[in-house]
Amino acid sequence: MYLRAVRHKPNLITCHDLLAIRAARGEFSQARTGWSGRLLQRWILSGLRGARHVLCVSGKTAHDLGALIGETGKHAVELQVVYNALNWGYGPGVALSTELISRLGLRTGERYFLHVGGNQWYKNRAGVLRIFALWPIDEFSRARLVMAASR
Image 1: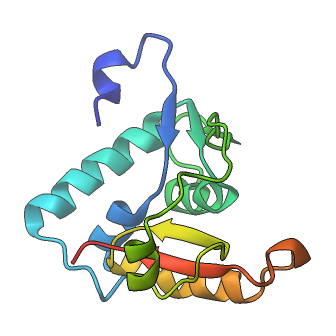
Image 2 (image 1 turned 180 degrees about the vertical axis):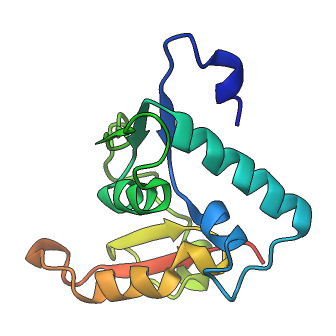
């Protein structure tokens, strides 16, 4: 939304998702957007249409943005996909207490995956469940899925 202020300077926009813009356009019945929110999202979309270079964090986001901005304006927007980097040394974490293991319905030594996310409709918890159910790696076939969310 600030692109007009820096239009004549080199700039690059990173686009993580378009959920708010799409919700403001009425694409999701689960999300109601007030008039000021719709105005803000139109302003943001206008900035995206005027951008020269946009990095999207997924192919789906790039596809959706391309469909939203079309071939408007004086130039085509260059869209590129650059995935979020994972720079942590992922591996087994700290052992859980016996009490917590019991409260989670796990057994000592049992492998599990922890999914932390909210209960909002756009977090797609059903999608997480489907992916986990189809997990193809034999090494983790007996692992459990623990989902944590705030109320």
